[in-house]
Amino acid sequence: MREKLKNVKYRMQKKKKEKVYKLLLEKYSSGRQIAALKVVHFYEESDGELAATKLHRHNFYELVVVMKGSGIHEINGHDYQFRPGQIFLIRPVDCHRYLYSEQLTLLTFMFDRKLLRQFKAQLENIPGFNDLFSEETEHIHPELIVGTATMSELDILLDSIAMGGLSDLPGTELIQTANFINALVLILQNMHNNIAEERINSDIGAAVSYMMRNFQNCIALDELARMTNMSQSTFCRKFKKDFNVSPIEWLLRLRIHKAMNFLSRSDMTIAEVAEAVGFTDPLYFSRQFRKLTGFSPKSYRNRDSGVLHIIHGNESFLENNNLEF
Image 1 (cartoon, rainbow, N blue to C red):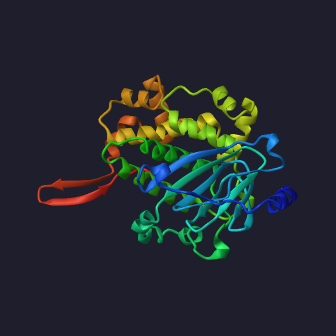
Image 2 (cartoon, rainbow, N blue to C red; image 1 turned 135 degrees about the vertical axis):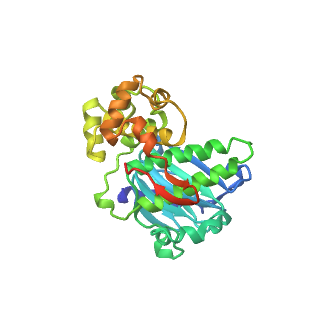
Image 3 (cartoon, rainbow, N blue to C red; image 1 turned 120 degrees about the horizontal axis):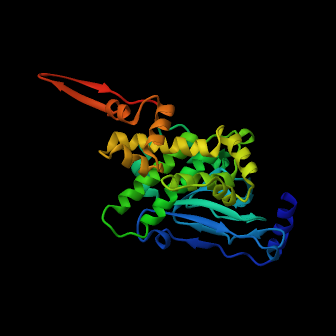
């Protein structure tokens, strides 16, 4: 990769000075403070040793998560290698581009500096904030990374923000802001700099995202394997290596976790909850629920009402019935 980069850079230097493009948040956000895009850069052999995006800067902050692919990130004249799972922040003053020799998929969260100021006081209390948002030159591209499961959750949050950008309903921008802060906190809570030990499989991440979006539907193992371009056996082996359980067991736990939320926060019947989380047989749902939580759905609903404010005559007290899962 480094040798390819030298050759490409040499050819670039022989050309006339490159134009630097400027991207505006308004183009992506419809006048709001936030936008999000999943950007896919395709590589063709005709591109040469390395394909390169246009050199550009923007008038907004851009938080980038590398979903798939690797390459070189040129930023302010310096070159940094990147890989799946890596996170970096591009500031309004930064001039950058990507060089790559394989398909590159990026999760990009774009936001105005005014939005950051609104929540900075709270965000600064989260470990890792200063590492990611450092203004020091040597920390422009810190080696920070998140795992496959976190990337899958970020993928879903990005979709929600992007879909919100297409809506004019009152309150949509507030929902976008909440989803963005959720994504940022998720990153800060889960990122680390131990790149050597982190196992990242972007194809597995795509399957996890699919399960999280479609847990209420019938999902077949062969369907997930095809999605990752793997055989069933290879997919199951790699999934278990990353998550310590099989794909079907992980999906089962996800469904039960969703059912716990429905039981605590709705008046749906047990059968309705079972159907809502992807079970066709309420009895089978009840057996699996008891197996994983130690309670029947009915008992869990009766016990788990969150923090209760219980009043007996003139006396009152708080009781927390939350169960750990």
